[in-house]
Length: 518
Image (cartoon, rainbow, N blue to C red; front, side):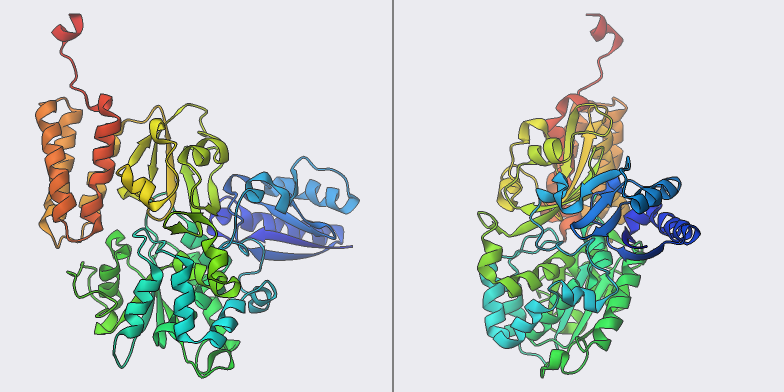
């Protein structure tokens, strides 16, 4: 008897025992004389069910989870005898959480072996690249522009405009840079795609290189992502061996190669100009703009800088056409967004869907409410620089403009949930403290404003001249918002001001004993 099993090698799954489960499956199978082939995939993104074990059957894959080492013997016995098991979840593709998604970018994540170029191609990989070769640079650019793709790193800038600027720039050399410095709390989509479908990122970057005339690419990955670094390096070697990197890629006259660079752990290096400084071997300090990186970027040359998810969206757009991508979404937010649900939430994981789903649907329906079972009080969207939304704003559609209209931002698509035990004063202090720690120090509003912000919020927490200090915090926020050189200082006011606006009761002056008696 032989079985084909699938177990994730994603860092999130490994953290809860996926490696141990895979080893236990091998040992238990050997003991029973059962032949098993274990494919280590990426994660499907249903993290509350990890370690997830899938079994190949003629009817498709059947999922079991979460599986522990002690569950392995009974699981193998059930599979061998074709009898029910308590951890059986049913057909993987029919799981409600997966079935409700529109997976364009993450279609292969959790399905293929991320180390296998053949597996990637067997599931539609490089189909978009082959069409790109037949179209040529101008037509590729038209497709990307028509798709409506906007930067998935947080700024939401139209990808087609950025590429066109670099394509039209005159230079003897150009570069493609992938920003994989995913530092926002509650975000993990970049890591998931790099660990689960790394060839997708390579294909997107290569297509960008052909479009703008660049021959070299760099993917800048944060040092806290060793599994992603390993996966990307392995995929680059395989792609080069397969003729998809190097000279005459894919049998064409184009040349493109790339390499991984690992950051040193600075959050500010997620800002594109700081990232470029780090890539060039210097401290990650923000550059003043202009000039824009599209004109004067890496080593002074025109450079395309996009986020992992932006490059990962390109193969679908080229394979299926711009319209197929643009048909999803709402307003100026086209396509899908991989949304990451984290924090105090029952069903934490990655949920890819078209723009337009409401915040309430994501938190209450899809996420299942809080893990503790207590009422949801606040939701932070867009990482540590994102605004806190109360339940009164849960009707907000997940859309760049809709969030901006309510003084929020969707950023990289991270959603962190808090129940009614949260102290919003401490959350506001955390935002200022985070900025103070992570500031590159180049501009005064960010460097000094955040430190003064921490001190002032601590006075509020201690009940010192609360009304006067609240006014001072608001003044500090306005100075940082309009005076900072980059988004770190400029966006830190979002969580602070939203906490003050929507949860003012947490900042109310503490009554004296006499006032309380009255």
